[in-house]
Amino acid sequence: MNTKNLVTFKTILEMGSFQKAADKLGYTQSTVTFQIKQLEDELALKLFEKIGRRMELTQAGKDIMPYVDAILQGVEQINNYGKGLHEITGSLKLAIPDSILIYTMQPFLQAFSHEAPNIQLVVNSMQAGEIIPAVMDGTADIGINCEKEYYPDSIIKQKLGTYRVLLIASPFAESSLLDFITPHQHKQVSLICNEPDGYYQLEMDKYLAKKDIVLDPYMKVQSIEAVKRCVMNNLGIAVVPSYSVEEELRNASLQQVKTELDEKVYNAIYVYHKNKWISPQMKLALTLLKKIADENGV
Picture 1 (cartoon, rainbow, N blue to C red):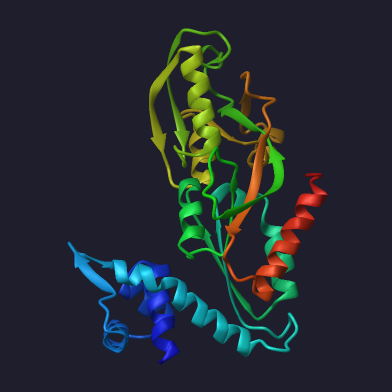
Picture 2 (cartoon, rainbow, N blue to C red):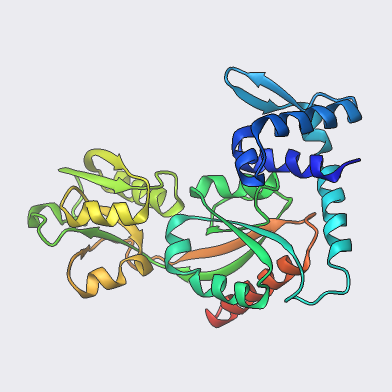
């Protein structure tokens, strides 16, 4: 069996399309299509089917994924046998929300790259709700996220640190809009967010509902930086992790709005699949994350 075809198969799943897989691998799309046809003929299985305009994985494709992973992991183990961290090759796939990636994970990425310079780091900035599925289906080796209420039994979860969230507004916002303590209000202001299903965002939604504080329809943007920029320009308010706005609060380009959630502590966590092979690069990543957790006193 040609392992290149298995790599192509796995890359299609990671990238989401034949064309994106071709771009990543440096192939033409016709080459990718030919390799998948070869693999399907060899296995006597249909791996993809066209649904609308998209090529979707068949049930047979889903069923063989653990075997594909095992083969590719075995090849990686053989290639790296007897090598130190500075010599091993391969990749490490991380799934991290935008805010955590930008503001808290840069030292981790620097340390990992220093210890394993030949490992390709694939860092996908994902919405909070996409991270567990990515770890479950193997798209990500490790996920870093805000803690949620429920995790599948196949997920190993470790605490990384704690943080608080703040409601923020422009320094030019009308003072009448900044009371979020008094109940039974209707405010003509929008809540701006980049992750409507994020855990702390949902907590704020519950808080507003309990207080009977009604806002205008929320505004959704693509990133935490876009959220902050919109709030600075007085387009609305936002609830964000405190670590993401420290500089803006210091220079008064944003102001904190008091709520009864100000002292609530949230957990940041890292997760991986319990059946995942712990490669040398994954072992290094988990060691570095444990060191961060110890430094954070958790």
